[in-house]
Amino acid sequence: MSTSDLKSVLVVEDDFASRQYLLLLLRKLKYSSHAAETGEQALELMKDKMVDIMLLDIALGPGISGIELGAKLKQEARFSSIPMVAVTAFSKDKLQTLEEAGFADYLSKPYTIVQLKEMLEKYLN
Image (cartoon, rainbow, N blue to C red; front, side, top):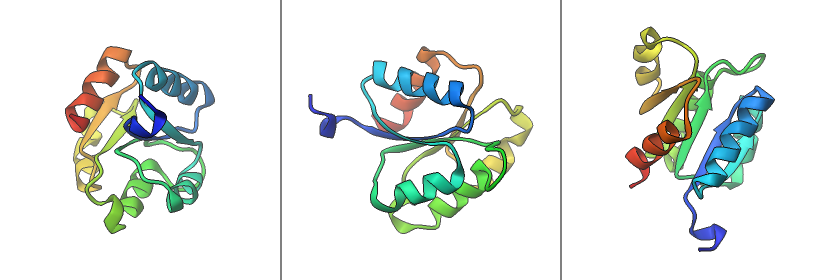
């Protein structure tokens, strides 16, 4: 299977260790990935990329939040049908806000490779 056959994932995570962990798990699960540290980097990266699913941290430090990033991406027709999953340590009471912002689901930190695999399969199969 060539890398062009792999499902592609956008990862936006400001914490270096968390980002590297997620990218490692995605490689183990045979997904291709594009990673950004900030919402602004993600917007720049996605100008010429297409992905099958987006995994967005919600608290991205200074700059735009994951929720704002998701809303901006969802405004573009080419991203409107791509599932967005919030990868967050926030509690479930934030879910209403996430749904209103166009997120399909959320993955609670800390998560396992099994939980990540189930989430990806839920939206990509």
